[in-house]
Image 1 (cartoon, rainbow, N blue to C red):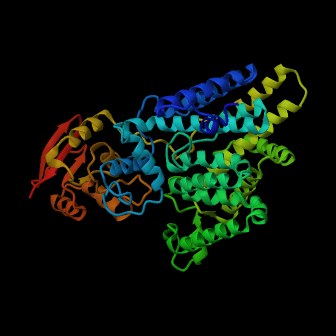
Image 2: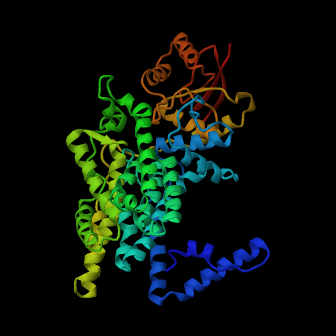
Image 3: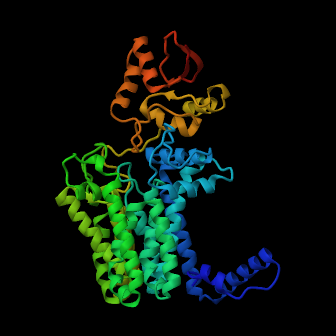
Length: 520
């Protein structure tokens, strides 16, 4: 099919001539030739897969139907980080406080900064990125699965099974465009192709290395999970190329030593906790206690999990992806560690749920698609069985667990006020003090640094800072207010409550929003 079209475009015989025009014509001719070579059944399948992938993309756009803004504090952080880079600041800059901060996902920020450098506003475009992300993943994985299995049902079920994995503000998911969700494109691509790529060892090793490095720069924990999934490939690699194996082993050892000293998870543990535990594991109560522990089957439908067991059995028989099988086993082990040990490996447990969830979705499509293809039954019964499973896995999809509601932070009044603030040249670079919720949107929409943005999970506006910002708006004592502003080094107050202090000059008052500038 068109699966390897990208590679064929580069390797096919090109037209001799003048550069870009002839190369472009060559590629168009190759695409036309490839399309004509497809059987009618394959063309229909291609259109169906494209349609299903578009459909699930539109489906996960649901939270944005009447709200075209990011819906999670982590998304607002990433938007602010991209804007910070576009404004010429280094990657290791806290986008809210404009202070040095370690960036553990530089590839994600850099890539999007490059995409938006053409003039597109990341704030206004972000709402469409979750849908685009799931569309790309569904379409690519479907084509890869068809290439592996030559089974239309297996490949056709993937978009639906992936979309059935739940999203909410606690585990994130397809509704949100954040590094861990974008990284799943790299993860699934390598799980399904690594063994074929390494058949042409050196060129394949380069491709795997480049994609793995990209994954590490986007979301490093998933790279660790991916390497563990490649364990079955190690014996063959060692036999054929012992030097390469030794080099890779050396890099792994260096990575382990680095994590021992630089792991970001140490702050979640008491000082006397063992070093290995602090460096490689995260307690399940490390994230803010928005809700109690969220179970795996609140995220992944149990029907999908049962079908994935069938898919595992079918895949064992054909054995075309040892890495996918290993990822399933590894994910299950991680799940048991979370439930019985109260800790997660290399990432917050919610991210591990989603990693295992997408593996489960792929295995489930293999299991259910293969079963429906192999078992003799009337077509009407076959389609009824497929529809019944789809109905079951989507049942209750929009019933969000308590405490996981979405963050609809931007109101028309806020957008109008923050746009005005952004356009005031005399207020540029002044720090804004607001409540924690509003602080999350102040920087992305106005470009100004904030004192507190309590919803972000990146260490902004927590603890004493959050309490002090609340105290500012809960007291009428101007001396206390002034001291709080001095502590935060804030020059602007943004809120929906009028301030009656002599050191605050009102500069904006519309639609219930009040902005004040501190004066000496």
